[in-house]
Image (cartoon, rainbow, N blue to C red; front, side, top):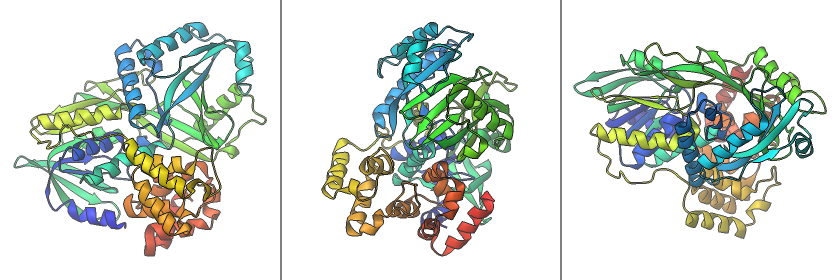
Length: 535
């Protein structure tokens, strides 16, 4: 058990919190970050690891919802475009513009030029914040992207949206880390078993899912941000809501790099669904599917894999067709889609990812439905406003709770890095400099990490081959990032298990050294726990 988690477990039952947040996905993370930064006493628990479900299985795209133009949801597209732009401005090192290169097959329901006109409308609704779209003839498409199979293509276009340069779980965790820096008491692997209102105060029976210990968390307000489990938590807590969730399962396959420029290739799969080929450094991420499911713990099936492989092999000119043997890693998650009404139904392919917040004013209980990374700042701001309306004081209500540190801090870090030739300390493993990567991942904390390397050059050692993570980063994770299981680090604090095959990870001698740093005397047990989970 990490010292940070051990300390927070002792604090959770020790006092009454203004707000208890249940769930550490993107909705819970921004709720905790916004409230704690504004002076609210916040606790946050998650039954698994932070960002353990939907928030670690996205396409890593922060987009303005261009597909919602087809269903004429112009207000939603306008809002999402505004949110995307704001996210790009607030996190310039993390949320970056990327070009989408789209080809349209012959016989598609719309002509390519008509869809191109839609991209111009989308660009305008995005306040011309990105580069302008361009129309691409069939012949020009073959010249620009020879990897695209143009045999059945009638034309295409290129437009801009945004993506997360690192991984989605890391982005979410940084909000959790921010909330803890502002005083939030957070702990992973703590289940909120049930909650009861006693003497105008919530008493939540909580359970440490690792040790089995149970305790009570007292709070004035509860925010149910349990993602796919929101409805289940509400049922246990006898809460009736206006909305509920439908689930859409999405999967991605990660393979060695098959596209060699920093553009997302966009297609419509055999059944008309959007299909992406997404750059991921030296790897490529392919997907996604949209399959209705009732199980939040959905798994990748052999049919899912074959669907993705068949489509990518059909749509691209590859030297050799991709097979299941080429798959390095998989992502599988459910998207919780908000629907209205007790018997709410909907076509999960047409439902948008817009969020909804249901409020029980009498009980001071909030439930967050739906949502996506693009809209996360809005969710945090809305939650803060609602909590204030419930009578909870926000001592610093105007404090800006999100965004990268200002340029003064950034310039200081880059100056120190340059003086010590930081970028030359390790062989480059990507086109991105070491300095840029550290700033994006750790912000102001990167300055302290730089000083550790200055004092001891061994801190710049790359422990796990091809992982892009140095010893100092693993030490930082051990001290400050509540890594409780090895998979927390390999899959969510980092993206090692997404870009390095499981066989290579297990065979790397640096894995044991990393476990020793992360878990100390528990290293062997934690490694065995991981081996058991992947066997």
